[in-house]
Length: 143
Image (cartoon, rainbow, N blue to C red; front, side, top):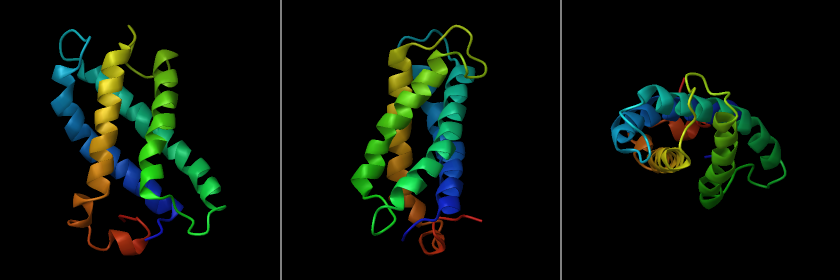
């Protein structure tokens, strides 16, 4: 399957909204360096990651036009989490994330972002193909 731009955007929004939210509910209470259970903070970070990821898709799409297959290899898709994490951290640290006034400990951000990224990546490359049988054949579009 070669995902289309809008298929990748739909898939990303779905994965961040559903899989990312479920994982955030589970991991927030055990994040390091955070007092209490700051769901507002972690869901704000998830929102930043989702919105920044949609913007990244346009850049990825432009870069993919130079590749023969017009798609990334799976390993490169995993590695794109690094630049998305750096951008998300700069957005959060600069104070542009809604609902975060006191800042976010770097350790909490790293644990939350890295584990969420891995859970979403693994779900997209495995179990997602079971409930969405035609997803692969529709260029990644869900609707």
